[in-house]
Length: 295
Image (cartoon, rainbow, N blue to C red; front, top):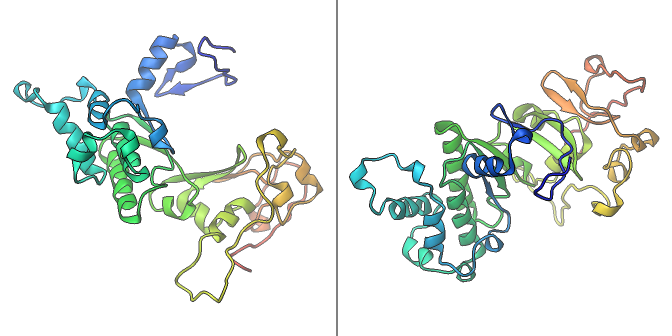
């Protein structure tokens, strides 16, 4: 299906809160997405208007329908709301920020402004692409608490994208691990961290240094050999195959999606599994491994 908006839709269903988006006109779809969905971009300074001050951009981004007060408090409420949003994302000196142009901000300040704009319309779905990538640890914790508060108090669903699996595990209920566009594994957070079934998930966990134990001199971090492939030359079958330490000839075929209770994964030779609990529907014999840390 080729839409009038220069994008190709290959899905047969595209639903958001029981609304079939494929059946909506482009104008209605754009209106729904603009009201119900927000996004925090990874590179915020490139998403801001360089010709307008931050204050005007933030105020313009606050919709009228979010006003929940008495009518006589209408005057100037957007400016007060903008200041409140900046304070919530960790900006104390709001006057200088609101009077600045995007090129006058640091990457961290730009990220905070982008987060404030994203949460201004109180969306039902917030897509956060590395929201704390350029922030210091204390501010990152403040932002995660803000997102958690939106999820708990306002019912906002948050789709969080990150390369740091350990940091997001403290805030997410469900984690899906992707490698080169393939969904390799998906499970509730606690289950996935304690017993991952895909080698890539285990590699991500092992890559986080354990500071509870003394590190030896020139200790290397746990990493996979090789590099990620370029988009024009993706491997056939399992895309982790050329880098996977457990890969065999069968990995040249695309693995089926398997499920054990709430744990889904796509791997011919899953790890951290007991053979009696592994019920594979294919004819291949599972190659069972126990991969914990450096064992």
